[in-house]
Image 1: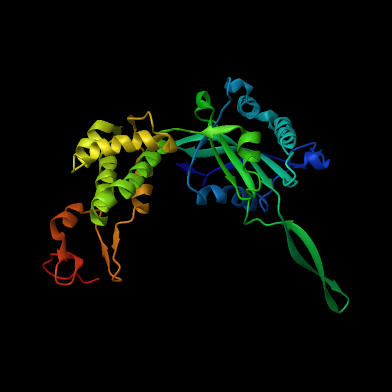
Image 2: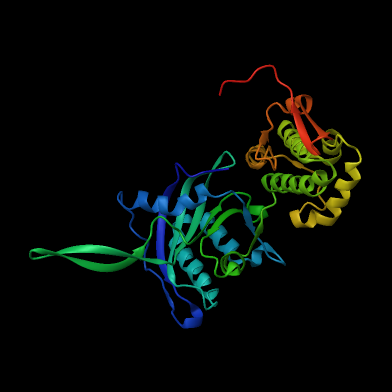
Length: 352
């Protein structure tokens, strides 16, 4: 997890990058921007808010041959080794971005390269490099006094509530290609930012593996358990899966299957489903990995524990006390009404 609350912008360089295919060129500033107490908090919110609001899916620099051939990896390493030269490195980064700006839909815009300190990630404090780009200009009104009247002046500028593109490169896990977070609000060319400019792959750490495996379990429950059993068993399977992850530090697939699969007939079904679908979740060859507790907590929040009936009635099962759903909820068939029913046992109604 990241913490940007105490992050400080040590240096900021601002350049403008155009669309190369339109001969728009690139403008490189001679010196860093001089930050002040008025603009700094606004820029911090502008840069960091998208990363606080989005799910933390990490990336890492990659290359088919060797990391040393990844230009952004080299720029980042150069900056972390020599932070005092970050402005010159920011020019290289902006020039590199310009060289990738060939798609006709790519918009020109300002590029901000920031050297950051006191950045929190995975309970560690590190330095980082932020590369941000603003593209979309917003119309706004200014007013000028003209003798006894106010005149409207139409101008264009950047909306500080929306960052168009950005990435934060953490000085962390260098051997794997650094840990990176990225945002892209304007997906007119998905390859431009992630593939062509950054050249990154997904960072397959415990957070990634935990999320992917639980998503795989969720789809298995929907595609296999639900058709074979019912909605209650689908919900209870996911509840057992989540609880297994929550109480263990490491995942081991055999232990997981023995504990979670109450119906042993589902074990070969699960293995076959993994053979067919595992590559989609990047878990086809995975049977052991460390478990990420934050990823488990996020997954628990997203798992639906409600049985929605076609009679406009909902039954909400408790994930905190799952034994209640198994002991006090029964499903049956009423011959007279030719309808299914759920029988719920209780002692008294709770005041809510």
